[in-house]
Image 1 (tube, rainbow, N blue to C red):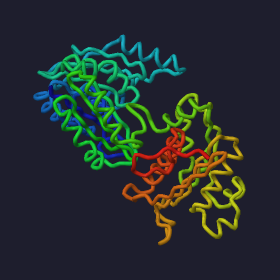
Image 2: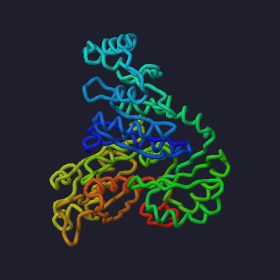
Image 3: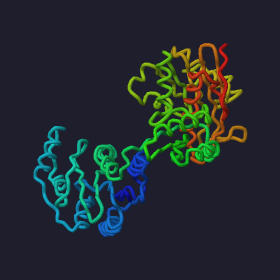
Length: 426
């Protein structure tokens, strides 16, 4: 089955808008045991869209389009799809009345320009939008089933999950696909592939393995297109044994969610003291509902003055060792725990760049500390600058949260690429 995707819009083509829809599309297909045959991007150009549609619909079984269903002059999807199918556009009064009611329910009057969204290709199946004003539609063009979806990610994802993916699964006969994703921190793709190579060979005729980097973690996807759940589960168990502590979760579990769940299970609480990450660790720990059960609060202390005023880091320590040092990180963690009353506290202080580095402390140097009522753990990293400042900050959050995960699981928080050892209680 040939499945293709077409994202439309000048904002996507020129990079001013991140195209998350194509990524979502490809990931959802993969989870279903399928893969996209081709992914395309075209700007708001009528002739280019017509040419692209003509080519795709001549070879593909399914085409999913993203964007171009709005009310402005650069929204061309309905027009070009109707042209590709050789059918006229029809006005749907019921859709226009629905759009007007939607605006009224939100306290507004629908602008006349939105009437354009009620003009769709003749013979299409209209797909009502539960999250926005632009209805989607499905239309057969030659041999190809074309799904035209809104470009707003929230709306697009609803249509994909509720209408498009069920259609594709039924047509492809892949309704029994089994997929598990191991989420890994601490190893790169090539290292993982070398560790799991023997397993890949052992299960080659039953399970397909895919590696996807989503820095700073890597996903190991185990897929059985024949619905062999036992083989997937067995391989997952063996893979976890080989990878040890590097596997922090599965499927949709984020590292922050894993840490939060461990805290709740143990009746434990956490605080953070952040410098170079500027509150990113706190944001990750409070991303999910119910975070107040385990997250107490935190400090964002960029300046030395605030490190002293809010966390009691002595000026003498800052003068002797600097803000980016083991000494400062440990004091931040201890005082953060003490001043918030949290059971544990994570501290992060580093040089995210691009400036501020020295030969002794290059850009990417980050110190981490984890403090409990009786213990203090420290780890220093010098992160690669391949992704620049954003990568240093994001990886620092992962490293800090991973220290908390390991501690809560009873392991050495400073584990480095080994099967690890149980932490000795003081």
